[in-house]
Amino acid sequence: MHPAGARHLGDGGLPELQALARQESGKTYLRPETGKCLHYYFYFIDDELGLCYLRVPTWAPFGLQFYCNGHSALARALKREAIEFVQADNAFLRIADVDRAQAIADALSPDMLHERLDRYAQWLCPVLDVFGRPTTGACGRPSIPLT
Image 1 (cartoon, rainbow, N blue to C red):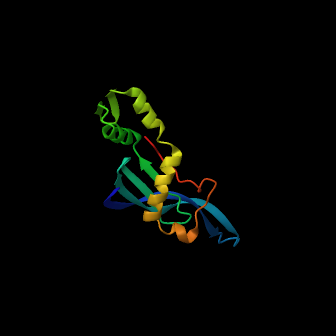
Image 2: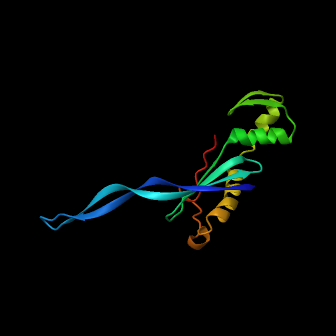
Image 3: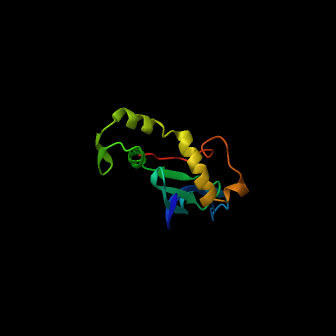
């Protein structure tokens, strides 16, 4: 893996409730709002997957998002195995050994991606050790868009 060193801040909406008080009655009520939250985007080049990013929010429970391009990963694997192919942008126009290419693509399993993500999460979000990692549920596994 070769870290690109580039990172930038982004913002996203996080649902929140704001407590307000009515002046006339003094009663408190809740109003739903979308707050602004910062994310760090870490871009890096993985030896097998190619260009990837890990999005790390600045608030607990630190739900991570990992992105890699499956076509880029397949192209890298085809090059390693010396299988000829023609690619235009993100599309394969010709692959010399389609069956082997399909087998390589099938090997890009969620388990393999999560194993890789665990290493990047440890490297780029070390605070997870402090808060502990959930093992089940929506926060237990970060989302992995694979295109």
